[in-house]
Every structure is written in C-alpha cells, then in structure tokens.
Length: 551
Image (cartoon, rainbow, N blue to C red):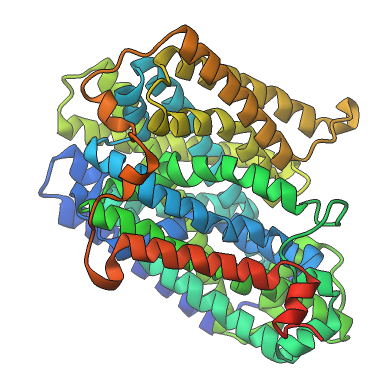
C-alpha cells in the first residue's frame, strides 16, 4: 500500500474485485481447456488444437495476439505526441492479412505443416528449416514476450504502484500455467475472451475521452490539424513519412502476418481451408479499430491538456496510465487494468506456445524422430517453461531502448527482410532454390544484425536512415541475392515442393469458398475497399476538410 501512496494512486475495492475476477476467469478457462484435451495424447491436439479452430476464434486470436501492451501503451503515447501517424502500422495490416488469406493460408493447410519452418523444409530444404526455427524462437522470446512483459509491468506500476519485477513474474507464471496445461486450444479460447475485454475497455476510455473533449469537433479545435492525418510528409515530427510506410511496411508486414510462427499458428490450427481464409479477413476488419480506440484517446488527452482540463504530461510514456486514472471511475479503472492484462497475456501465451511448437517439432523431433507424441508434448511444456524464464530474465534490457514501441519495430525491421524474401519468392517463383534461400536467410540475418548495431549506436556511428527505409533496402539486397543464387544453383523440385508454388497469382482465388457473405473473395474485396476509403478520408488536411472532419 505504501508504494501506491508514494505515486498518489489508491486501489479501490471495485478495481481489485474486477482484476481478481479477470485472473480467475482467464486462468480457469485456460486450465479447463487443458482438461478438455487431457484425454488426447496426440501432439497436434496440443500444438494445433487438433485442427478444430473456426474463423471467429482465428480472427479474434490473431487480433489479440498482435495487440500487446506495447501497442496499448505505445499507441497512446504516439497519439499524444504525433497524433494518428503511427496508425499506419494498424491500417496497413489488413492488406497483408488479405495476402495471408489468399496466397499463404491455402498452402499451409494443404501441406499439413505444424510449423512454418516445416513449410520451408517442404519448399526448400532442412537447413532452411533449422535457420528459421532459430530466428522464430528468438523473435518469440524477445519481440513478443520480453517487450510485452516489461511494458505491462511499467503501466501496472504507474496505475497501482506494483513493483515491476513482481508484476513481470506473476504475469509470466499465470500465463505460463494455462499455456503449458492447455496448449494452443487454451491460448486461442482465452485470447478470444481477452479480445472482447480489450475492445470493451478501450472503447469505454475512447468514448469518455471524446465526450470530455467535446466530440470530434472539440478535438479538431484543440489540436493541430496535422495530428488527425495518417500520411505525413518528410521532415514531419512523427519521423514516419508516407513513402517509408509504403516501402517498409510490406516488408515487415509480410513476415509478421504471413511468416511469423507466433501469429500464423492460429491459421495452422484451422478446421479447413475456408476457416483458414476467412479468419485472417475477420482480423483485418478488427484492425480498423486500433486507430480510433488506441491512438485517438492519446490525442484527445493532448486536447484536454490544451483546454486546461489536465496538466501537460512531464513524461509522455505516462499518457495511457494518466488517461485511465483521470478519466475513469473506480471499477472502470479495474476493467482497463484487465484490458491491459488481456493484451499482455494473450500475446505472451501465443509466443510461449509457438516456442514450444518450434522447439518440439523443428529441433527435438528432427534430432529424435521416433519420439512419441506423449513425450513430444512433455518436451513442448518444458520448452515453454525455459522460454518463459529466458524472457523474464531478458526484460531488464528492454529499458535500454529510447522508446519501447519504436525499439520493437526497429528489431522487426532488421529481422524480417530475409524471411520475407524467402517466403514471397518461394510461393510465387518456382525457380527459387534451396541454396539461394539458405544463403539469403544467413546473409540477410547478418546484414540485419549489422544495421541494427549501427542504428542503436547512432551517436557513435552517425547512422541516419530510418528503420522503415532500412527494411526496404535490406529486402532489395536479399531479393538480388536470392535471384542470382537461384540462377547459379537451380532448384530440383520434389513432387511435394512443386505443389507449394502458385503457377500464377490468379490460381490462388480459384478455390470456390463458401456461398454468400462468408465467401473469402467477397470479404477480401470489401476489406480492401474499406481500407482504401479510410486512407482517402484521413490522408491529409485537405481530405479531412473534403469529408467535413475539419473546418
């Protein structure tokens, strides 16, 4: 209690009740899912939910695994400092989810792979599988787990005065518990519920903030008009010019949404191809919301400070916590803490489950191919525990980045290019060879590491290239290497690998799909047009005036 008083925060009884109920329900459902699966000793029942996932569960799980504490805290800060500019990371995602639905999900289902490294082995060779498995485990530990645990702990300290390490360890233990027991089924079911909590909590704080500021008209009157735009020119304070978005995001987005085990594992557990295609599209429609429910509250809080309602923030990282404390009443504060925990636990549980799957199938089983399914599940559970311990131990290094959100994105930009190149060329160009893919993965990873070191030490190296541009340039180098090496060392296709390359892009949409509104082609078209419309509305100040959102 003293720590709470030291930061001027008092935990109300209603908040405590809400948070306790959240933990009891989520952990209880996760354990129940594990007991439901207990009768089965099939490894795919544990790691891929027995191929039983339907499109609503897939879409909700994709959304909640993606939206972590990094997003909730970082987006509020960005909304306060730069307005909607970094919303590009959310509104570009639906385009890549369309790519996942149309071009990658069908191959993943048809090849019956358990992991994406397994897919690379079928398309290229075993060494490609080994390298991607290693990179995927590293990204799951550092990007999806470390950053999330630390960010969540920082906000819980701001809200309730809870010691950072107590928060990190408690959250890791509770999340690890139901993930270890329940496998992917527990992860997906809890993620679906957590998505609802996350959306409800975020919508509530958005509505309260917008009401207090006087609606959109009051917001527009009290912040610079440029803060309400999505596409910025070079030299803008957001350091995210529109050209860097269109050059860099497809590079990191294709890896993140189409080739990252932590994210795509939900699609691998789909009931059939229709569910595997429609689930990502449902997630794409949900990705419209974050600009309005994560960025906008930060911008509204800025407007309230300019109106004199609140004092300007001394530390912009406190925007999310300050908005919760100043805008919400007891009980609702607890709900927002639960929403924060939902974002944290869904991402961490997904990452831990992917670590277990990658280690079990791509490393251990290849070393001991005769391992029984029962033992493989046990190995996966041990890998989950080890991954969790390593992630907790490494959270202390997250604070070394200038900002948590930009630090996470920088790491992704230097990791993604070689993986993006290998997957994209792999499914669209039949001449992409195994030697070319392996050399691209290795050389691209080493180049990414070199550029990352130049970037984080820019005060000594003088490095000035924004990370989104760097991602594009690295992809170009990887693509050149892959093409040249493929021509020098041609690929010898197997009967299986040749089936994992589209003869032409239109072949991807020959699958009929469901009739009516649930048809994946219709949904993909609707999602594409919706995103084009949103970009047209929020592109710049002129478009906002044209649509009546600015005077």
